[in-house]
Length: 116
Length: 115
Image (cartoon, rainbow over all chains, first blue to last red; front, side):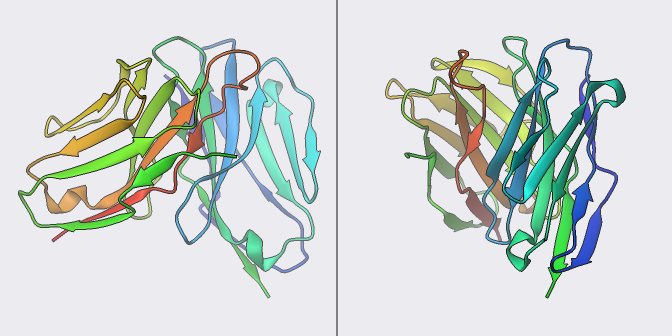
């Protein structure tokens, strides 16, 4: 069975600091997809990034970057120069590729607080 | 770009009442998912539909049912509501194929409060 672990329950950093959110996953599938979602206080789930299991290239999007390492089953998320608007709960999620089993399995989330 | 549309955004029901949530997926998305998120918890998968047929089932109570209609919108029906059903309910949709990215997009959620 698939499993996603976000060991950091809560993180607080001062504005402009860098912060890394950890995500470790388990799956028996050879093809799978990893995601990060942001849930601000208003409640919606905002898609941030998807990474396919066959593409280990790291990605940078503005202040956000993601480090995918299959060897350690990790998909970590770094925010550079954090801002107050980054305060939210961040979920890492895994989706397998088998037809009929394509639901997302979420980690328990990391609550990030950026202190002004 | 069009997103997943959910209605109503908020509803309050009494115990033992029935509630219906509606979801309109992103156009041309063929799969719809329902998730339930309790306070302080991660979203839990309830059920999904692919091309109007149930494709996967999670921890959905027997008191709940869902279906997807010919226009691809979906409804989640919840009966005999209990206090523990108070949660944020998400609908999500995705499209298959290499161009779609297999990304699951979520609606803004429907807040259900059972009193």
